[in-house]
Length: 132
Image 1 (cartoon, rainbow, N blue to C red):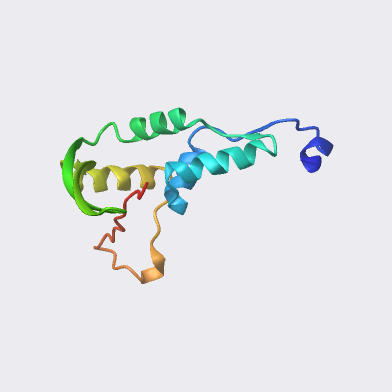
Image 2: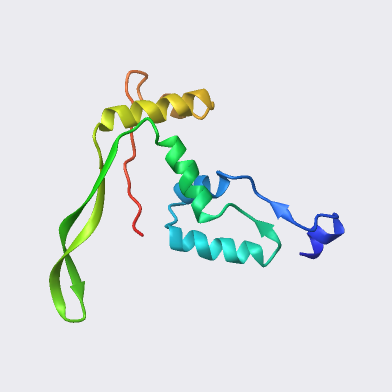
């Protein structure tokens, strides 16, 4: 805090989309982002709200059709194992989602070629999910 004050920055503002990028890159869930946001706020560093993060994500996913429904999952609890209907989201077309992501990454200059580690005629995709 003192460093920012000495530089005459009373409040540091991180632009919208940066917290969402950190969330995705680091693998945070929204609860972890809330804790990070509170911690940063203690140093007078403000970042986008969860609402703004979700809006940025919505805009980025606008070209991809995502369906959501509640499906039966097995859940372990204090009373043993039971089946609950829990939200689940899935893509209509994984191919469309991958090409959309590749197009955005290429436009932003963020394609990684791994110095010959990945053949030129292949695209390797890491698939993961949000656990929270």
